[in-house]
Amino acid sequence: MFTTTLARPQGTLPLDLFAAIEDLKTELNAVILAHYYQDPDIQDIADFIGDSLQLAKAAANTNADVIIFAGVHFMAETAKILNPDKLVLLPDLNAGCSLADSCPPDEFAAFKAVHPEHLVISYINCSAEIKAMSDIICTSSNAVKIVQQIPKEQPIIFAPDRNLGRYVMEQTGREMLLWQGSCIVHETFSEKKIVQLKITHPQAEAIAHPECETSVLRHASFIGSTAALLNYCQKSPTQEFIVATEPGIIHQMQKLAPDKHFIPAPPQNNCDCNECPFMRLNTLEKLYLAMKNRTPEITMSEDIRLAALRPMQRMLEMSV
Image 1 (cartoon, helix red, strand yellow):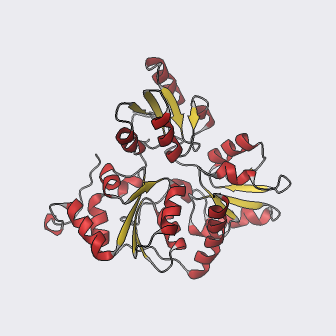
Image 2 (cartoon, helix red, strand yellow):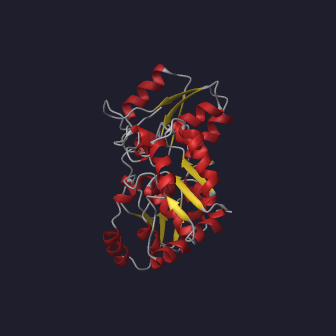
Image 3 (tube, helix red, strand yellow):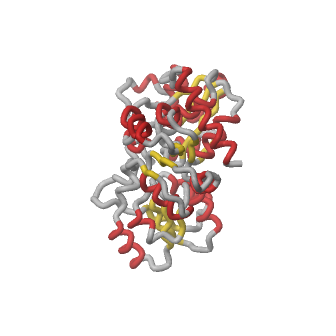
């Protein structure tokens, strides 16, 4: 369990945060959407837990008046893009994303201008400004499926994750022009340490997210999105897994397959670098205060929202 001490008088927080959050959900007609990489307490209080594609669909279909997005900034932006008339809250506005930050809008606009004949497919892990410059959005769950639907003669820019782009190219046989962005968490796993774990745990299967580097992916018996990894662990007869993605997912793996053993893939250094520092900024305390104070709110210009909505809608249509 991960905890964060807030620089606030303890008296501002109720003794039972779970009960207080449930009361606020009723009062606000609110829904809590949480990513698999969140603190276990947040996962347990959430109304819906999922990967980026699942969360985008949940945000598109909710009847709630208020969306509390327990994830990172681009995820809450996605919810706002799909729900302009709803109040969308993010427990901590500093919960950004290294991958999204690796694709500055002005630099990407210049890159795109040099290749005007290319269709732009952007991974959902990007800012609203990048989505607005894209033709289609994808997630790690549907990237291969979406690229396979594009005519072979159509050149493609894939942004911002080079590792996911490289994986999609291998799976589809399509050449794509890759933006050289990456996730600090998924690039930190140690190939050497994973090999050592496979030696000491010979019955274990290594499974990995496609944002990992090729050197890690080649040791994985299964590669997929967080939702796909979770589903695979439940169905596989294997009893032990080495998990090469953010270890927050292991909370759900242990809940859904309690008889199995899950080992987080280690980073290259002796640190907690396999944990996303941005995801961990959200805490149960901050989530409660966001609901109580109706802030921090996600906002954006209507021009950006509408431009970003079009490729999001194309993704949802192509993912049916």
